[in-house]
Amino acid sequence: MRKQIFTLSLLMLFVQAYAQNNLREVIRGERGISKHFTTFNAGEQIAFNPGQARNIFNLDPNSDLVLMSKETDRLGFTHYRYYQTYKGVPVENTMYVVHEKNGKLTGMSGTVITDFDTQMDDRSFSSLNSKQAIDAAVKHVNAAKYMWQDDEMEQRIKAQIGDAKATYYPTSKLVWYNAGDNVSPRELRLAYKVDVYAKQPLSRAYYFIDAQTGQVLGMKDQLFYSDAAGTANTAYSGVQTIHSDLNGASYRLRDLTKGNGIITLHGESGQRGTDYTSA
Image (tube, rainbow, N blue to C red; front, side, top):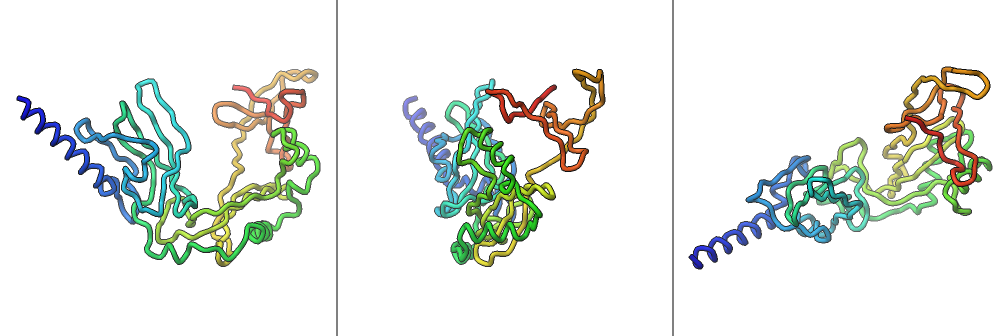
């Protein structure tokens, strides 16, 4: 009996070691990208250490998985959310959620790169600095006026954040990027991700500037509008129809149907700069 138990335990350890060494094969999809969903039954589950995710999935040694958040649900499953890096630089549009229960890997969902392009090293240097990338993005937007040029808006963000140095002036960081919503290892380029907020005309977006050529590779809007008409009990004009902005499960007192938009914010101490909201 002891011999049978020992043999069974040894077999289980062998199966788990084999599964871990071949986990990249299990999650590999098409074109160097992971499958969007992978699940394991009880006999396939292996131990999971959130700090060793890259090694567990046997990913490229130049890449890593950076933990963004951790949540445990009512069923006892813990969900770890990661983004991927290559040589320490984030890969835009990667996100991998690892599901674990009782210390065992139960499944994964999302997108990571399992096979990077062989030419990645040739794209790993930057000819531009951050200031040059910001200048290229601002020139591309070509707005008449930007939020950081508006004294009132600059004072507002300082009050909202509680930081006297806060500003709408563009920020930038290096990322790996390819145009479109889907990651493509062959098309990845080292780029500066620049946040540009314009007032006239109103726009806000991330612009991706090729770190070698200075060309604009693509952009992602940050402003989205969802107009909702409703009724409001006003202080002096009775019940009136108003416009508001749907934001998740609540409505904000933002009327984007008039001019550049009318945004009403709290002015009292403690809530200054925050939206008026209602379900």
